[in-house]
Image 1 (tube, rainbow, N blue to C red):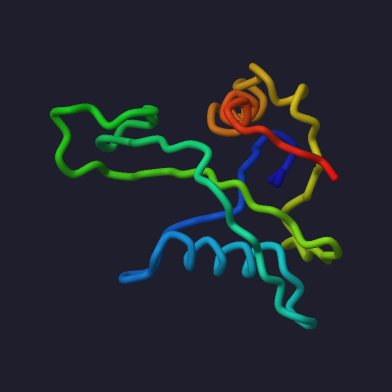
Image 2 (image 1 turned 60 degrees about the vertical axis):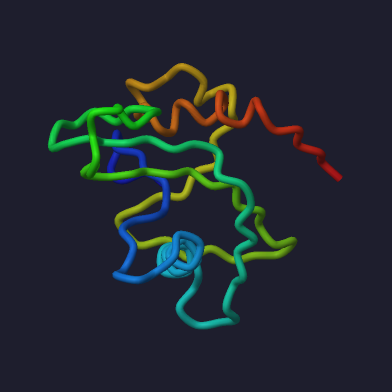
Length: 131
């Protein structure tokens, strides 16, 4: 999703206390992308594609947890989510939902940010079959 003209982000957010990762992702996808009126969309959440750690209050995320860190500040994960055959999206007014081809994301961290620009690398370990 695009916020304004230059800021990109994936749907997601923080977990509630006691909430599991998959339940939290289901809730966040429903809050961010599902229409208010209408049937509830069931999001098929598959494998975790990538994990990044932010050890302290600096801005950098690392693809590993440094060994000297026992309580990291934040953990960010990207999951593969299979969309239903038919689905309607409802996006907040200040966001734009754009379909960007993978070749456009590749190695463009200045435009999309490091997490989104790394998606082609993360997907390279999966064998995706189109039917």
